Amino acid sequence: MGGETFRSRLLVGTGKYRDFAQTRDAIEASGAQIVTVAIRRTNIGQEAGQPNLLEVIDPRRYTILPNTAGCYSAMEAVRTLRLGRELLDGHDLVKLEVLGSKETLFPNMPETLKAAEILVRDGFRVMVYCSDDPVQARMLEEIGCVAIMPLASLIGSGMGILNPWNLRIIIDQARVPVIVDAGVGTASDAAIAMELGCDGVLMNTAIAAAGDPVRMALAMRQGVEAGRNAFLAGRMPRREYQASPSSPAEGLLG
Ligand SMILES: CC(=O)[C@@H](O)[C@H](O)COP(=O)(O)O
Image (cartoon, rainbow, N blue to C red; front, side, top):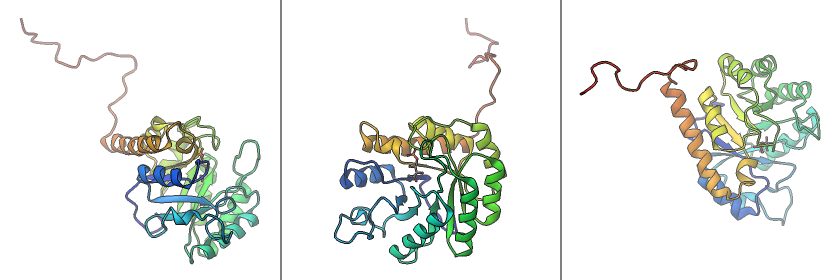
């Protein structure tokens, strides 16, 4: 993705944990290599003298993916990612999200497209949170985004994948990785996303808000791996309410 190879197909956020120690332990258990950080919410150096996430999430070990959570306009998002690039010594792989509604946290797609254009021109490698509209997904790819990240359902809702059909169209047409972002609730949601053919899954709340975040992080890792293997193995043909015996009906013993 964006010219780099990652072993893990699970990408995780850093919000909503009890403390930095729990964040560290859950991320470790998830096996994720890409860890996204909301530049407007989490201190990675903007606030001198305050606890800094990078003291527990080592940027030499993880790829830190600055994101624009909390931004509602293209220019706000662009400014935020330029600040992130400064804080991370020129690191240019970023996650763009421009929100359109404080209630639903749905993306504002016109502003997202505008910001993507500016950022790509500015030399960023842009992974982009977007609606599950295949036409807009294609526009983002044509602008030069390195990954398309359609929502599964509302951020923080844990409702799982609401429209697998649209996701399938986006996956089939895309020439860059498609990573489901937002709304995953449990490990089976992650597995379904991967079985559909997604290249990866990004999540935060499902792990951070679980009863046992570290254990859920492990379950998500396994869900993503199981779903990927099932996708590669190829599902058996679905039979429309028709049984088929598991052993031959002919030549029964006795
Ligand atoms: C962490 C992040 O980048 C967000 O887009 C979002 O928080 C992910 O959504 P969930 O919290 O629903 O997984």
